[in-house]
Length: 231
Image (tube, rainbow, N blue to C red; front, side, top):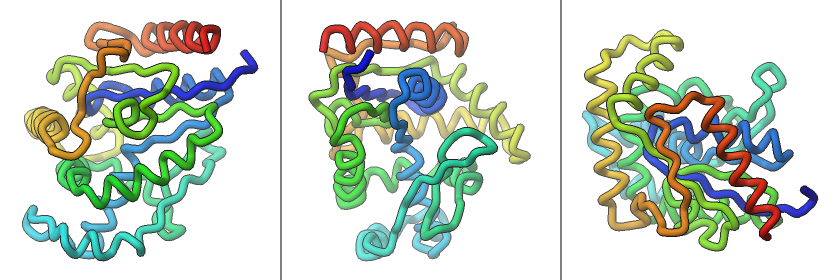
């Protein structure tokens, strides 16, 4: 298992991509990058700098401010994972709210935002030995990845999972609100002009609708081990 490969995990929101990718990276002793968190960080920046008013995003001002958006990941020994920082402020909790979820796909539609973050992502994976999840990892960031996975699940299942997570963090939301957000994000992610979410022919399909976390993980590990052997 000494050979290093690139693993790209794409898919719809709330399919368990980040959890699965993180576990896989630990298993393989690879670097894990949550690209969705990077787009959430930009969304948080836009919100906190009042670039979003009444749900309307001032994309021009956001693009002009991109050079001021400094995103980094720092290891948190309490959670054994990396937290997201914006200008040295830990924003891990702030970016996981439904409010951020409701705007992140709109922010990710902006070509200039995508271009800047994709360059950072490519640099992170230049030496291989990386597991990265998002919406366009296999299609844009690492088109030559040795293993590409597309994760999905029916919207109702994804909404229920996300709803449970939000309740645990103390958010006052309804299941209907979460389901509406899931469906809206699917539409925006799949129909945007720049790097839409697509299932590539070479990507292995992982439908998690009726799978436990353990079953998902075991299948991913088997796919990764096979890809490493064949690389």
